Length: 118
Image 1: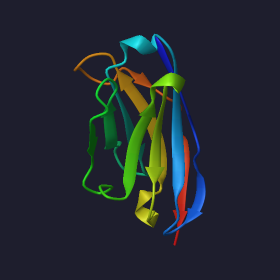
Image 2 (image 1 turned 90 degrees about the horizontal axis):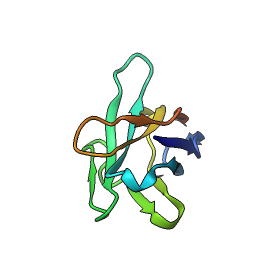
Image 3 (image 1 turned 60 degrees about the vertical axis):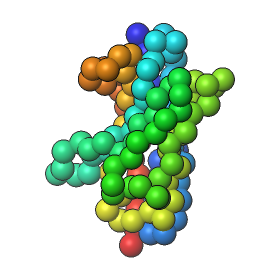
Image 4 (image 1 turned 180 degrees about the vertical axis):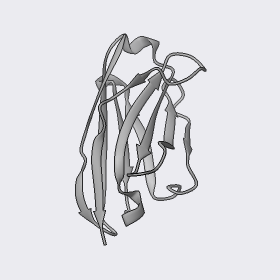
């Protein structure tokens, strides 16, 4: 089992920055990929960014490319999402997820609220 705990959400003005953290515990050695998803009110959950644990390779949704950066600290078993130039449309609950293979993300955090005011 893998447990994920997010932190770092909050309220910020448009154009501002926030950094989200996702601390993993349990069978962290089994994690292959970690990712961030988000869900805005009335909308479906959507992919934001992912990072391959071993190589550090990353991938981003077009809507956040060049504004958000995903990174990981292996020693701390923690993944970060640095969010810059935030827009009101970035307002959502952000979820950290992990998977131990190439299938669906089987582990999820509880979510952290990010609100961007205009």
